Length: 174
Ligand code: CUA
Image (cartoon, rainbow, N blue to C red; front, side):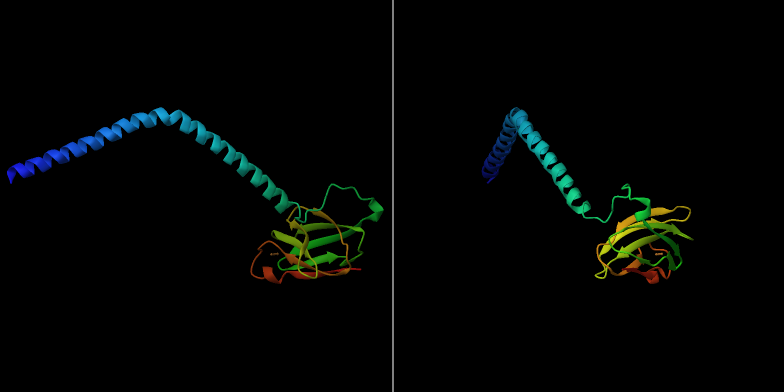
């Protein structure tokens, strides 16, 4: 019995030693393989990085290009400009005049009379066609050319208090 236990113990020690030997021998081999492995995966990492940068640029371009930011720097002839003065209050809009013509540039001069509001123009399908901030102490200019006549909705785009959702008015485009 004792000799059996002794034999089993010896076999176990030999097995453990073999495992140790195997691991140590292989770790040396793995170290030797390091340079080729790092070189390969650094290359993959570089390509992955380039892929992500390209993907990011493509997504940025396609998600921002249809955004309704008209070219505010464009110079329209002064006499061809319709001017609409917009005041944003808690919780209503003043807009003078509230009727404009289609096909001619409209310059909205937008200011906030108490707190920050957002001036958003929506078409009849409630698609945003133009927007700018209405900030106290500033007058933001939004130039937009309406292609289609109709009733456009002005909604507030910036949470400005209890009745923010009720800040709605209408713009008529003839
Ligand atoms: Cu004004 Cu929200």
